[in-house]
Amino acid sequence: MLRKLLKHEWKSVNKVLLPVNLCIILITIVGCTVLNTDIFDTEESWPIALFLLIFYVLSLMTFASITLIYIYVRFYKNLFTAEGYLMHTLPVTPIQLFHSKLIVGFSWSAFNCLLTLFSTAALGFSAIVTVAKEENIDHISRFFLDDPIVNNRNQTFSFSEMFGYPPATFLILILLLLLTGCLVSIIMGYLSILLGQLMEKHKLAASIGFFIVIYFFMQMVTSIAILLPNSNALVNAMDNDTSVYFMNIFYRNLFPASIISQIILSAAFYFASCLLVRRKVNLD
Amino acid sequence: MTLIECNALTKKYGNFTALSNLDLQIESGHIIGLLGPNGSGKTTLLKLITGLLQPSSGTISINGEPVGAASKSLISYLPDHTYLDRNMRVRDAMDFFEDFYQNFDSMRAYEMLAQLAINPNHKLKTLSKGTQEKVQLILVMSRRANLYILDEPIAGVDPAARDFILNTILSNYDENASILISTHLISDIENILDEVIFIQNGNLHTHASVDDLRQKEHKSIDTIFREVFKC
Image (tube, rainbow over all chains, first blue to last red; front, side):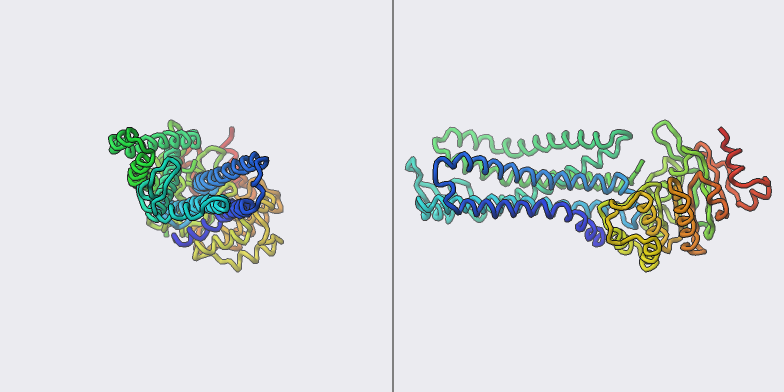
């Protein structure tokens, strides 16, 4: 039955989120094409370039928000409004309903994050190639191959020394951070909606209230997890003269602490959601 | 054979008691009218049977099993409002029912759609409210279920549509199945009922055979209802 639920969930969600995410691909292609022309070679065109850059960033933020908000709205509308009368009378268990929403919601959210990352990387790469026409492309490519380079303050450093990890590991950690971030965001939204259902009245408003409270709690826990165990190292790094050394310490601590705290929070939110889902529905 | 058994069933919303200590048994193979004025607890009882609400106290069993995934496969439920995703095409709704209910007869469903000249490729949101209700009724009555629960199936539709709905109900249910119809439009359905259940202020007032009640009172069920629930 979970397979059937997933099939129909995909079908419904794809209708909305496929066009939204195709727009990201479209603006990426347009952006890369524009960057590979000589439109921005003159100083007069820089205000337009700035405007397009702001438009691009806002578009990515909008598409990411639409994706996440739609996943939340779909969960609420399909299970706790009129459509819930159909979903909760299907011969399936409440936990199967929850898992179908979670799998599809997480998959779309993760796809959106990866697409956004790919889009910014593609545009960044196009910009580097365009700039490197005039400057030294070898200098940039050596940096991404983890070879030491010299900056304008005559400091020698490699990618690993700057970011704390070799480029491939750094990329894997960014992906892990994004995926755990997507997971915790989706489950946090679902948990807020489920908590809202415990109220006798104003269930939607209560869900939004719970979301805000859980969001602040999550931010607090993540910040403590990142800063507290590494505070001495970060203070020492700030005292150190080189900004490269500070970034190295910062990234080396940020990734493991953020990823682990997001996994722990996801697990906690998941088990809380499962408990609430098992506590059978009351559709007033 | 007992299909539904409710023991001391109570449902409270805060301080308001919607159903109070209801004891009820419904056998297979009957068409039962669940009758009562607005707010008497009819919809609450149906939602408890379908698992959309949880009782405050008391128990319900369907075919001897508690309400759950297994009992839901036995029940075909038509709520008093549209519950389909309005962005779906009629054909998508058919596919949805066919996937989840082994007892869904899609051929019969498509025949009924053709009789009513409803195009399966149309989106539900492009259909009138009455046509959407007909699509929903076709879906519900195309299942070979043990129990059909129909909440106000004829409220708010024109007399011609009422005839279609009643014909659809009568010509599509299995003789061994039961139909529980909630309504306050009694005169329209009186002739198809085997039994009636009167609910008043969340309490069971009467549960009797239609023929027995008519013979005893020498009145139609509609007249008896009007006398019982006189304002």
